[in-house]
Length: 394
Image (cartoon, rainbow, N blue to C red; front, top):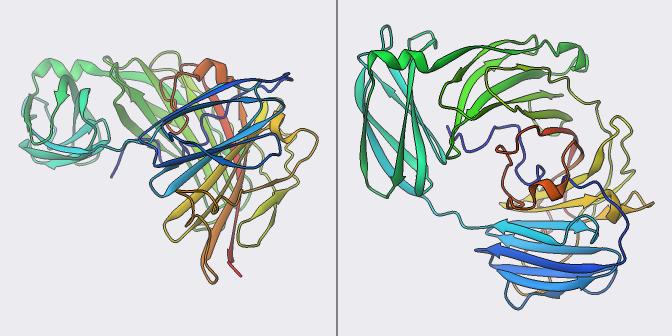
């Protein structure tokens, strides 16, 4: 199980958080570490490939689009100069593996352990043993060891800060005082009234973030809410509430991510209203009826198509869309590095449209890479209402 981000939070969506305003134009700087290809469009002009996909700039007048390729994912930002003139992406996916020898015998009643690290989590059965940390990120980070009993009740927790290196082995031994690292008092309010009648599933995941960015999953709760566990060494807690219309795609989805300003707090994660999108299916989909009146802080839409291991997604701000509520995913196949980003006849394509509401502007998070989830942004309240369809490319 990977704990890199809460499973219902779309990292690409999370960072289109601009309150759009008018602009007479502006300088746009794009930094895309590790990108294999990039392109941009100014106003309604032709798309141009960037000479250096990792760093380029241009002048935009009324609106612009930027496309960055990270492996099999192409991220498009459709913005205005008033949204932001500084775009950051991080396409590097360096992974390492290491191991942790653990001893939780001092945690009374515990018989199993969970290890959290940057990039995921691992589990160990028994009071002593070794946990493999696979798909981990290198560098300084917090290793968090949580001891539990067979019923999943947490008994103790500890943290160790390391500079993680590939192939390394670390040791974590609990003491009797580590039970004091568990914090009670955190609650999630009942949000079942905001779950549409007849929807298949709903719930909430709570987590805590450590000083060096490790996400420690805490509890899974039903929409009726309940209590959750936090940790003394955490900087703040967060909750991701969700509801799915069906058990599998296509389906409508509702999500809400709240990042607290502290820990062991009370969350009230009522979900947004459902969103109905109009999607026209060709080789690449187009979207119309992009309006959503169920929040007063709508900032834009996340629009996506997936097929054959490739994903093409766009984040279109209100400023970019203007009075027109339409958007078509761009055909970039004439540009170097994007020639294969197009479904073949007969491909099964999953397409989705999501309305995004947020209390934070893109200016408040401009130092965060646009394809990473801003779990460190205290006070964030992000609401996403999605609609999804499937079709066969002609």
